[in-house]
Length: 104
Image (cartoon, rainbow, N blue to C red; front, side, top):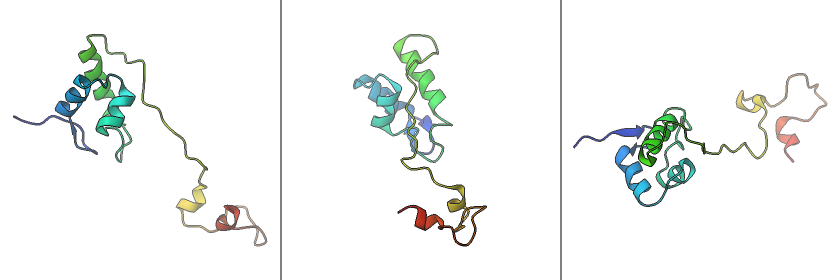
């Protein structure tokens, strides 16, 4: 039997999702926590719609799922300069604190 992979990042199959549904995980958030779909590199951009469609068909309803998975923001915003490898923010003069000094 061929596997139908729904979440390529976390290798979650359609069978995994059906088993989770039968075990009582009947909303997107609990399916996500149980199977791990939408937790990989794409953060659900490639699989959430497929899982929502599958979930609605298992529930016997239409294609609308009213409980999208929660997104959680970072605890502390990260300056873009940090990702660019810069030690100072744009517009700072030499007497200003660097990125590392501002975290304290």
